[in-house]
Amino acid sequence: MEGLYGRKLGMTQIFNEDGVLIPVTVIEIFPATVVGIREYASGKRNAQIAFGQAKENKIKKSVLGIFKKLNIEPKRYIKEVLLAKDENLEIGQELNVSMFEEIKKVDIIGRSKGRGFQGGVRRWGWAGGPATHGSMSHRVIGSVGPGAYPGRVIKGRHLPGHMGNERKTVQNLKVVRIDAENNVLIVKGSVPGAIKSMVFVRRSKKS
Image (spheres, rainbow, N blue to C red):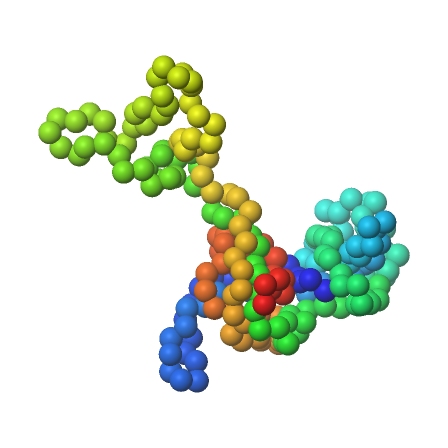
């Protein structure tokens, strides 16, 4: 299967066998249950997986019927994950972090931290105006387009606006350690998103 969902717990550092310090991110992988297999006309096959704790009275009745039919505990989320053509999963099968034991590198998808409305200096790294000699234009926009022709702001111009809270993918992160007992995956490097935010961990598409 392509991957599983998890929660970013934060960053720390560990030492490898040679005594070299490695900055790592700790991710808790959510144990998931297969609740369905969907096949499309294009030949693509997706597995519907359910994960996360939830109270029965917080789930819609239409969704609750899926869990009662399979005689499993209600889950908070139901997501679709791509299946390989030659891979077969059974309804009710349990999935956990052990699926990454033979994988050396992973891609991690998450949403970056939201920064709200930001100016061009912070959002795009503008240099800003003069800082001395009575200048009153330090971090303001200034001129953003030609005057005579075409007499408008060119499409795609960097401007102040909403920053962050975007889908980001970090590729080819090395799997450093797997803790099957606690469903924890440790990867080398940084991962998008705030602490406790949800991320999707999949086998690397380029390695």
